[in-house]
Length: 368
Image (tube, rainbow, N blue to C red; front, side, top):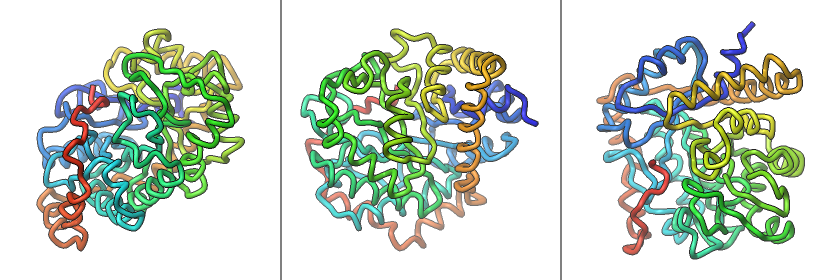
């Protein structure tokens, strides 16, 4: 039987400093006390080094774990050449669903060959606010139905290649005026407006079988006047699970972002997010915060039967999905390079440049 440290740790997906695993992360992976890691630019020197790093993670881990990355395209893309370079989603919105599915599959094969089994992409948000500082060209369209079609196509392409896709940011981050990395945005639309404009892409993701979703650190008073979506049971359990019928793994966005951290201690945020319906928690920077969150989850697990059942459900979902999408890298980086030359879609990235916009936004708001 798993200890509380193991089962609660399985809910944590963590970031770390440097281009090699820290002693602490290595130890927690070996003990089965982490669900996985997420890679940022600070962890990447080259694509070959990422292949070696992913192999190190898998070798350390006591079982299947997530090796995740944000590789959307455009300004949010961690991996350099020779990984396929994709234009921003807004530019890709001028292509077709068929092209997007092929692009997702090609990128998925490249990520899977490096040992990455989870892509925190694509963005399912609607480009509904021209003044949005954090979504903008990361969204495929202003039309919810086109976002649903194109984002699902890309996601299913990734998954056909063995990489879990993650639809973000539920229930919609498109109509915000603030960057949730810094502040808590508020979307003051009514339920009918939200259900017709922001939610349809996520409903489509649920129906299509997209493996995972990520929450938005955004307050929607029409659904919950107190808690942002990441901490809201009415949104995560009531809307996503009960109304939309989503059965995949639900990730929180990074719990250290200002939208939550400005008003919630990491221990409180971790416990509340899981109780509300999150199955996995991203804590992307501070090792101290990761350990505090783990301790808080264990304490609640040991003292609350209801929370214990919720953690067990979340851990089970995560384990089952990791078994469906195991990290299985090519044996060597040279073998991975050879696979690029034999991939019939390897030139697709260059072909997609025709859709790119010279006015594309350049700043990545997510690589903090």
